[in-house]
Amino acid sequence: MRPTQPAPVPAATGTNGMAVASLVLGILWLGGLGSVLAIIFGALGRKQTRQTGQGGSGLATAGLVLRILGVIGALLWIVVAAAGGAASAADAYSRCIDAAQTVAEMSTC
Image (cartoon, rainbow, N blue to C red; front, side):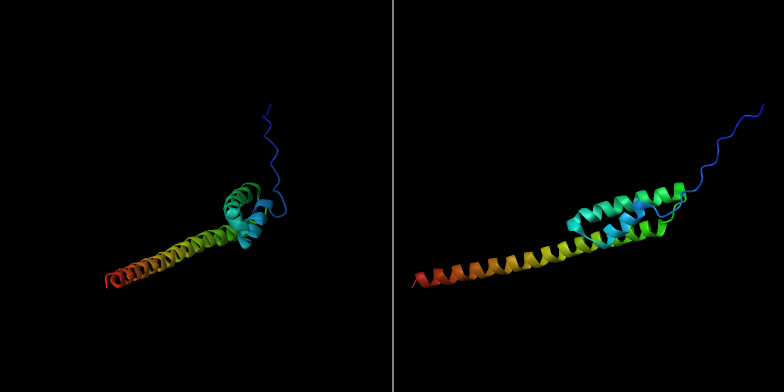
């Protein structure tokens, strides 16, 4: 008697939903939440397309790349904004000190 082999699992057809969601969220921003979800859905979509044979691996990759670049861009924007804010705060402090010295000089006369 021959042992029976399990029937091969047919390859799923269509495009993986996680891959599509990753691309859509990769294009949209949604206040930062979309970035996190696009990265998660992209990783899951790539894994699922490899396992099931569904299409959409490129969509998942595109969503991942878009959001990773988006996160890097947002971090750079924050650094630049913080540096600009620090410079203007330092300028304001310097002007305040100058004004205080002027007032002090005027009051000694």
